[in-house]
Length: 88
Image 1 (spheres, one colour):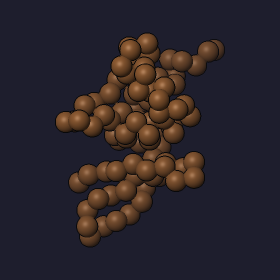
Image 2 (cartoon, rainbow, N blue to C red):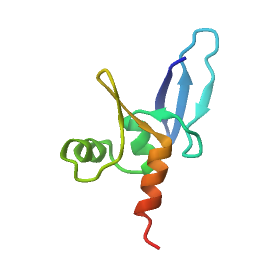
Image 3 (cartoon, helix red, strand yellow):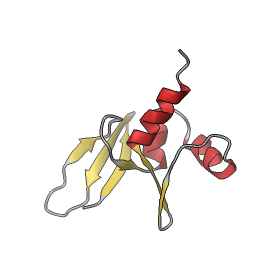
Image 4 (spheres, helix red, strand yellow):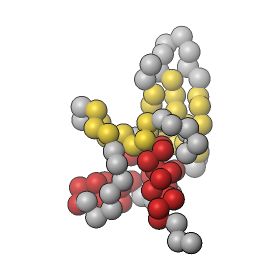
């Protein structure tokens, strides 16, 4: 089972890549799933270039997973980042 994340008109969707079951599932911070840099930037409402810069410089540390050459973010880590960044 593989998941590809795409952004369509401000909404982020995950597409099931199994040939017999091509359903779209909306990506949410409430789900524990992996998303790519574009999906993470959509969920955080920041440019993808910002995530790439933070990842390369270590300026802001959001955990990520490297699978081969691909970079993935866990939605639970993105949610945790939002929580610790929230000024109360």
